[in-house]
Length: 387
Image: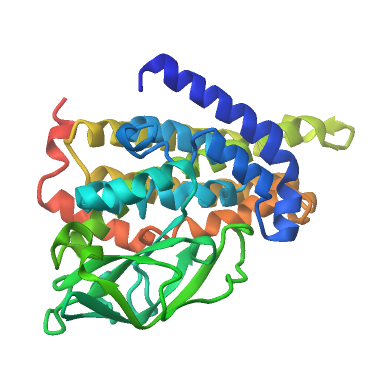
């Protein structure tokens, strides 16, 4: 996608987000759902396939373009992005990076059009940011595999048509070894999807538990046609997903900053706008500085991703900084508005609750610190700072 095309897409999405989605945020919160009209329009705009290859009907955005789009999508409730996030991100990228030609041809066009919703079924109760504790099993029986186990906190599970299911195919393997990934249609016999969770924030972004009870699928549904590719497929998807989530955090921070500046300019104490108080100004200055720093870090990491220079240190450091900064920015946003900011009708109150999850999913902040430190000890940072 060239620059002019990207500019057009960003402009259209920016207008749609701010004129169509932002005004109904309270309705989304109350109903815990994105309206079908919004989902339909999103599909017509190509949002179910912006990061998927053009040959399968997607927009084929690279990492830097993806990040810029994510910043626009992040300006509103993160539930909006979640509707099509798994198709473009962690689930769709499993197919893009590791699927066979037949698997790609069968499923990617359906993902890009929005005809099919895909979910990334990795997390378990004892295998979250570190999948090495995975207990779900897939046993080969003739031309089939039989899957047993369960998954937890799976985004879009309740509305999904197909699942990217990670399971151990080698029961004797330890750690990250022996994990494979399978394409499992959600309506397959033995698959049970629980009702979506009641969460602290991000209403409208559905997550559910999934159970697999003697689920039989053909061996042709083994992603890539090879066993033990699961851990690598998961990490490849998650690494790129961390860049995307970091960019969403920038969009969230931008919205909170805008809300805070506008409130400070209009709200009065003692007959004058609170924006004239230096301690309020200090909070606004800190919010802007951290937002700008997070944006610069995300875009720099995305450029290195596209240049194939770094696909670990950059995504993890960007996700770590942007998500932690968002928490601080959201806290200041509530503080600036005081009692008003604590009310459910206030955007900063909702974004304060939304923000907390970003430090957990796609790998916790603690996991990101471990990844960053290990990369530093390998010398991965040296080329970036050899100015």
